[in-house]
Length: 253
Image (cartoon, rainbow, N blue to C red; front, side, top):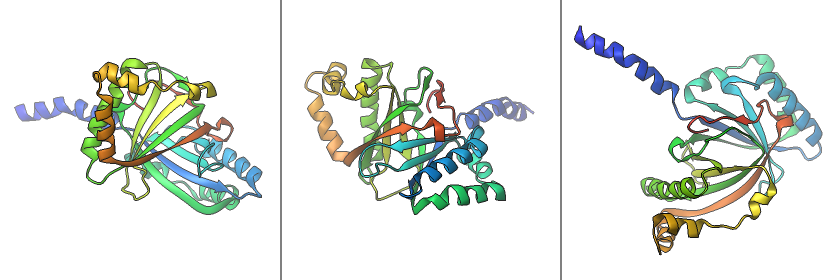
């Protein structure tokens, strides 16, 4: 009887833990047919607003504004969970027909799908804001160096949380193994292009937080556990999205 009471007492905690699963985002990178961009955008907007405007299947669309993927679109579903994927992927024939006829038919066959899990502990979603511009910093982590990289991330998070706490950012790990260098991404959310022109004070801030002459050692540690990094700029397209673009504090996004 005592054991049963303990189990019953733990049930709310178990349920709460399940409800607090780290959010997952399914990102589909698409390239519109160069002669059918207007039709692609019109079909994408109508599809998302009809089928992906709320719940676990909510979709935000971003336009890539820099790098080799310039001009492509990111169809991002989430925040959701793996458990919810069973429901959001079980659409009816009308949904599939609409996607195939009005979206896929106006895009090139090439596409890339990735799944990203929010690292809540290293993210900073401390206030309400609206999606607008995203600075994407993608890292290629060396094989078997995940633990060491996470230790580096602890130090980076402490710097920004101490010196720039009002900035909103998200940290995400790729859920799937890959050879593309897409292992981890740090996303900064900002409103105005002037943000990109700010002085880079990270080396200075790092030493103010972690001690004088510590930055050189930090660079050596980064070099030892990563193969490199790359960056992109994404622009939120509310007109093509099902989501409102509103982000609220939730311990991670």
